[in-house]
Amino acid sequence: MSTNEWLGFNTKSAVNHMFKLMLIEDDETLFKEIEERLTQWSYQVFGIEDFGHVFEEFIKIKPDLVIIDIQLPKFDGFHWCRMIRNHSNVPIVFLSSRDHPTDMVMSMQLGADDFIQKPFHFDVLIAKVQAILRRVYNYNTERIELKTWRGATVDYETNTVTYENETIELTKNELFILKQLIEHKNKIVSREQLIRSLWDDQRFISDNTLTVNVNRLRKKLDELRLGQFIETKVGQGYIATDEGTI
Image (cartoon, rainbow, N blue to C red; front, side):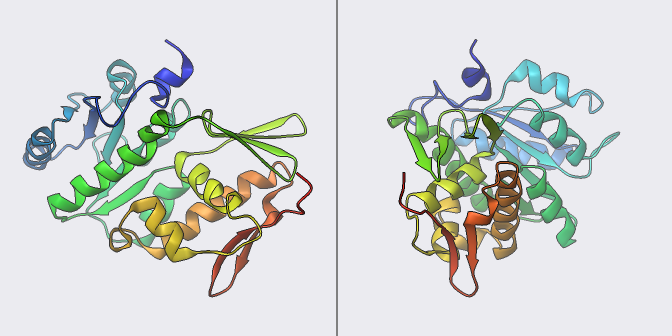
């Protein structure tokens, strides 16, 4: 199995694939309710029996998307998110009954794709799962392209940016934001436009989440000395500047 197949970004289609979802939730009643709703949408749902070996189960299941609670027995959801992110770019959605803003910030900094506050409406969960799966795996129905920007090569298939023989890896959200900005280079892309493009419905996502994702993207681009070229236009949005030499 190739690396891209393991990461789930090369061979699956949102149209004809029965997606495998890993639900890491220790509340048995809530787990069964979520499982029932997701199963109605033809998703395969896998749970966890031993919360001390979540990562081992992740390796075994090879899910297409992970839904994980923050408060878990033995280790919290942040711990398992770090371990998963060290090996895979699979989409991750956090669930949390805590309402502290730092939980959302932490989840985004760790590379999560979304954050859902408990209690939540099941239609919201389904809509978010569908939007993420469509956004991530629909790349497979398109021609994979290499984009160039300020001398760097952005590879949509491997989620990487290469500049002067140095390469960084981006999460899907970071790549999508960069893709939107460089395809409108030297033009302002509004925050509202980015939110709609990323999450389909801006009612389901906070403005702060976008800020965290953009800041994380800039920090990674700083490793290639490119972060300064993603500029914030206060009250308007963001712009990827380009000298027009590429």
